[in-house]
Amino acid sequence: MGVLRILGFLVIVLVTIAGLDYYQQGKKHDGTLSASGYVETIKLRFTQQQEEREAKAVERDRKKRWKAGAKSHLPTAGAEWVQYELTDTDKKAVDIVLTNFGPTPLMSSISGTAELFRLTNSGKEGIVRKLSETGLVYVKGDEIAWFDISLKPKSARNTLAGMALSRQQNFMAHAATKKGFAVIDGVAFIETTQDLTSPTEALDFRKITGRIGIDEEVVIRMHTNAVDDTILELLGALDYATLNALLTYPSLVVGQGISVSQDRQADVAEKMDQLYTEMKLVQEKTTDEKLKNLDVAAMMVNSLTASDFNSDGLMDITGGEVFENQDILQIGYGRAQKLLLDSDQRQAAVAQDGKGAGFFSRLKDKLPAFKTPKASDAAVKPAPKKSAQPVRVHKGGLGTSCAQVGSLKRCSTAGQ
Image (cartoon, rainbow, N blue to C red):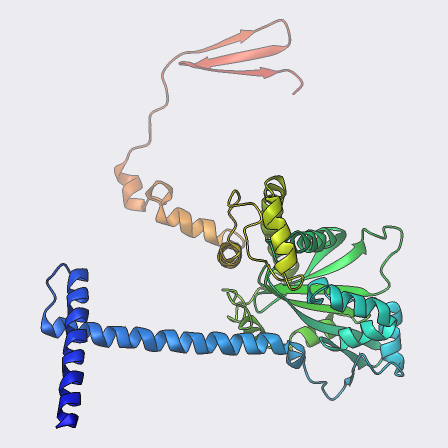
């Protein structure tokens, strides 16, 4: 008897819950929800919950891969290559890299003050260990390359330390003379030809940089003495789609098989780098506004609660005066990149189609005003009669003569 009472109570509870749920769903449908429609809402909500669970699982996996770093995505040395760790300091190639190629850890990869102090106190050995987390040395004959893939986390824009680090990174990016190098699978690679922080010293090596994303970025760096073909061989061995998938907001153009003709790659790479620079300038303007509207109390709270350089703290540092959404910057940058490359593809197609007079000839053929009249049309339409109006010639004193035909007057100057 007790079991029946429990079952009866459970049935009543379930019916009550179903009734309340039906009532709430009916309100969303203006009271027109039928029984079959209610069943459909159950299926729809179940599907949505399943999709949300899958999305959360994907995001957990992405964060796990991001935390693991990108060193595993560096290419395996081929038959003609020898590969070394940065910690193999007894190897001649590694010593050349550390001595002459100037490899440095990405500033944003240093998590906080504690790690910065450790690196400072440990000297060269600490720097080498840090570099070995993200890069390798490749050797092919006399050609040597330091190849590094570092993951730059989203800037902490709600603390003074975070904004200072972001501003320093942007300044260093501008303190260089650069030129386009290549565009590979949607990633623009730029070659730094002069470091403006040392304007009197020319670079003794080639410095190649490529970025996927903005603010939260996959940064690909290579310092090398190799020729173009060797550099392109190494860069071409990367799986850019997999690297792109490490980002919260993957780029719309990376890993999509977008091809840019060899003769246009340097120019397109420069355009993409200019787009990146302009978007970072937008971020810098927001930084200026934040500094003008600092809330001292919020600044102090965030300074105390931020665990490292990449932590934002608890409060809005401007007290709600300045709005900033970094996600919008990342999404907008991806769309702008796609528009830029799509536009370039169209321009390249038009230029190819327009070689010689072919493109414009076909355009003229499509316009009635430019069509060549057929022989039959020419026979039907008589040629216009010549004007019967008198021609008057006037000669002036400056060696000129003018002829007037109707309302038209034409003059010529002697000796011309």
